[in-house]
Image (cartoon, rainbow, N blue to C red):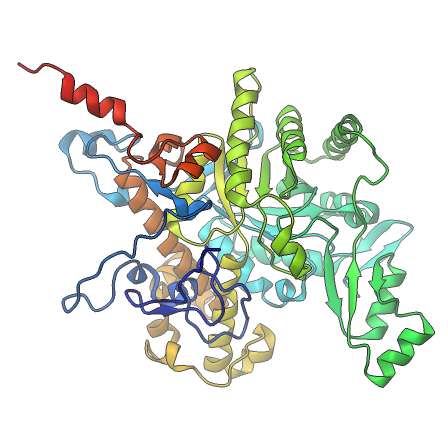
Length: 549
């Protein structure tokens, strides 16, 4: 098992807990005082791309990325000539800079296209309470960055204020709050996606969204995710709320209505209740039945008015992956998100997160293989988003290259949430009257933050950039978490621009699989990406053997 380092002396970053390949701790806390790379990026932005203490140091890579399978075992190729997609005039003069790289992307067919300023999107932020707590930061941040955000499953079902009668929603204040918060800052780039799981479909979420918001919302069917292969879960500690959720039709474990459980709760031996959703497609027994049911669901959503429909699938095996690709392509969906094992923004069984499903790298490699089969058959392949452990610019580039040209977006879950946590904690200290509203966890600034300053203008490297976007007046009410998100994503975007410029790709659609190489033979075998010294080897030998005048 590969052990990832907990600290990076070059960047002055350190993980509080055990780090994953992404650089995030396996357990990410909303009250964390720092300072992993993503956390620190929310404050320092682009500055964190470079070694600290320039002028007094030298630095070198540990260079241990050839071990095992994972995105770490792919290497990014650099080229010494060319500028695919660069501005023609600048390229002709040899005046091209890395900042000439365009990060704009889009997904969906021409009649249902969605433009994005950056090739990023959030994972599904659903009924987990932490998503509700920090939603204003998440939504405002994504909107000003021009990227999509996903309202995950069960948001209506767990809302105490929602009114559901006879299987139809007549009131859903939390869902409306989430959509309206995003559109408050929306400028035409990005979009909001609302997921449907089994419970949401039964409750009439799609019909309610269409009635309230029309087709400006993208509706998403959900098959699964990378964290677990059962329905969504949350944990509640109030027995009365647990009983309310049971009345809504959810499974509560343990059952809060049983006398022995109530007695245990009163005595203190029962502390919490896990709320579970139903499993999907349990009445079906074959792939053909699933495919027929899915196409019927898409047909219904189109009938009630949705033009943009997407699908989210998890790290199931190869059959489910093939079904998702084939169906999403034939149904002309706007987007298919494929989530590899290991992720999780909510309450997923830990052993399941560790042991089930296909790890991201392998799932994404097969995604390309199957998408290529469809393309070679003349089928217009659905635009893809890849999810599962992305948090750094290098991994984002590798994901875009591994499944190029089909992938348009990289989906990030926990990495997108850290800015919201950090910004809210800082806002709670600097604006004490807002502490409860933004769910700040600190009473004072920790040294890891105060070393950069004592005001928002000093602490966030992206403050003035965001002010230019929204205006001085809007800055007075913009959540600090949104400023932190812009700062963090600006750093990720700049890093991606640099990798793309080095590969001479000046647009997202210019990225190719040949822009990465395998760092070990196992990776080469599983992905079809040539080993480092064999990539371009024929071209190299042709140069050596070619006669020159």
